[in-house]
Length: 178
Image (cartoon, rainbow, N blue to C red; front, side):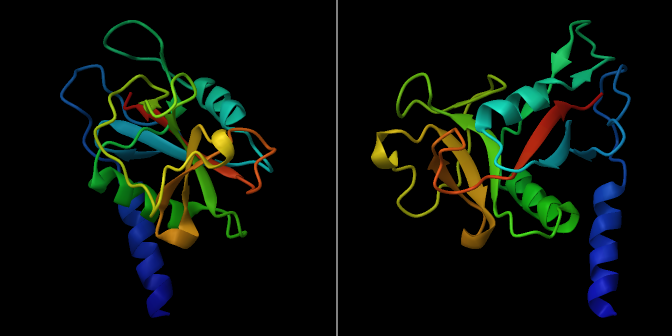
């Protein structure tokens, strides 16, 4: 019973709508998305999803009431602080499908230039949480990043496709707060 109460308390805390950013046009997160800071997040699960398919899925979401009057598309999540990383790990643990899926795509890639990591949303890489010995570009073809629940949510570079020796079944999309 105590565990259930703890889970409910964490879930309720995650679902509380945070105050919108100071911009007058901010109007919250879409249904089924969770706010944190100035962004909204949502996990998706698909069998054997490639990094590119996950990124395209995230780009299918947009912010309709942006102050810039330009359509702002979603992307795989960029992570810029330990606090944001911790938020995503708690969110993942409390909302994911409880299958064995342990690898989750995030928006970090070095597909363009080996070793020059960039976020798919174009933001600067200001924080990393690499696992021990990572990134290692094993076999010369690991250009996309996932975190792994079995290894403390540390990041690992993997092959971007489904030829990957490890199945990636989840990903996190991120949108600017509406």
